[in-house]
Image (cartoon, rainbow, N blue to C red):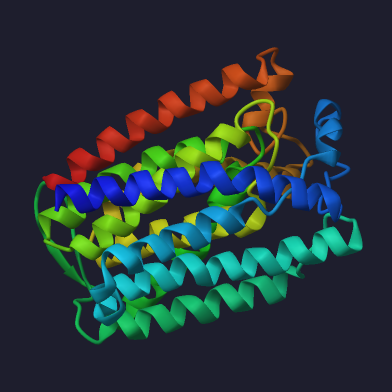
Length: 320
């Protein structure tokens, strides 16, 4: 078991380290570069020439590695839900990235279409999951069981759409989303092993290895961005493991940085519409710290530390 987990991590890491330079070169050649929003901070305009869609490699690699090391995963419904969520939300992101690059603007896939596809996948995964799992939610510490019944589908929808979009909002600085995601996935390896779900633990380790390899090229100064292909996939996978491993409460705490980023955006938009005033200097909130005088690398490090705290807190909640 230990050898399988280490192999999943190591093989994914090596594949991404080896293949990413080739992808970067190819994307430069075909001009698949990042399209920076007109609303981005001025210093981020220079990233216009950095290629995007780097998530392609770290989405496909863990899937292939898992199926090679754990071929029985293809017959494991719960493992397949997690992997399909990863690839499915990655495909939505890829479509969004492709439209952005082709049209050379930051609009991408229309919000209503993206929302519909996210909803469709969430409903699909709920019905797959419902075949052999409970719709109860267990409160940590007190261990109270709350039977949600049909309402569980609503929770699943918020988990999948919320997590995928939250990671996407966090993906605004070099290494920020990738580093936070790496830390966020770590507790779920232990949760999966506790429940003797080796295929899921193997997949998570493969994702973490791929993310570490990606960070080599995504850390400041970034040579490539993950794009929506990567951010939506990571959020979808986090929601899926939270659902499958019955850690619906813990995943909110573990994803604390992503939740914070999302809440700040919601508060800012609501305040501007209702009061005509901003609450924060800028959202997503990581930009506010740059405007406050911090360097990008300092902000990313601060968020990684905060994510580590959320990871430990979520792990403790999950095992209680």
